[in-house]
Amino acid sequence: MRKILLSAAVVATLSSSVYGFGFGGMPSIGASKDAAASLTAGDVDAVFLAVKNAEYFLGESSSKIVAVLGGSEAKAKLEAELKSAEAIKDPKEKDAKIAKAKQDAVAQTIKDSESKEGKEKLKNLGDAQKKEVGSAIGNFALAGLLDAIAVKMGSDVVSRASKDPMGAAVKFASKLPLIKDIVATLPQQATDIAKMSENLVKIAKSGNIPVAMPDDKKVQEASKAARD
Image (tube, rainbow, N blue to C red):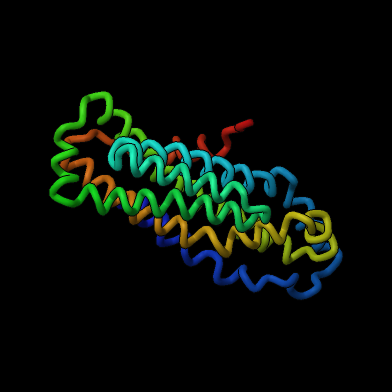
């Protein structure tokens, strides 16, 4: 748990120096050529892949956590909010609404699970339910760590592009604003998920629910996984 909290805390500071990125001063032609050679399409695409995988694990885990710990009413409410969000035409606004709905549902589930009734419900979970929610909690934490990785990689991409305005900045001009937005917005989400993960682990412990938290290897593998 300590590793998760530290990762989120560190990543929350990463955007400060990159958020105001313009393209910096004009480097020499030689420096521009070297920088262009070092920043690749793979570096850029890796940022978006990490974000995509974070979204996958956030969706998969939050749905299971809410369904098992929150119950049918909480599950139905989340599904209704997600359906409403899907109707939003602006992609950026839609993604933000979907992420918020999932996080809010988990936050409410945490609150409910800390009540007297919630604690009693934890005691009555079957082994299969405990296994399912324990796995979901680990994947929820994984989503936050993948957000953190995306921010770190995105910060690096933007920094390197800013040193190469005549090369990499031009080559990846259409994607850099999107990466800049990732760097600016995801640190808070990563931090919020880390805090909720800590509370979920405490809840799991009180209900004798085994939780397998992601290690560095799993985080790295998950950040690079290709999904349809």
